[in-house]
Image (cartoon, rainbow, N blue to C red; front, side, top):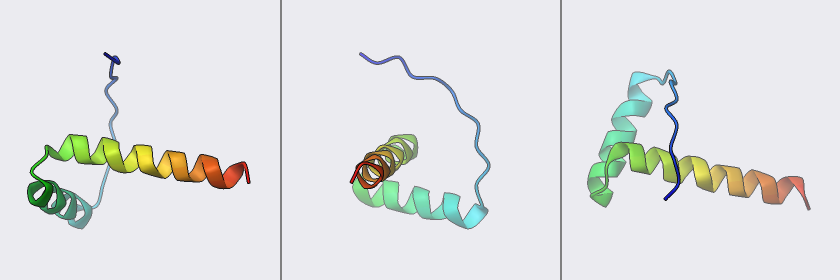
Length: 51
């Protein structure tokens, strides 16, 4: 299992609300959703950077 590290990030209240809403709709914890979204963005940007 991967070892996770803590990270502090400031988000706009509307972004936090939207994340909670999406996480609830997907029935997953909001931190899991944030990790998924970050991972998708990282993969996408790495692909675009290497094309």
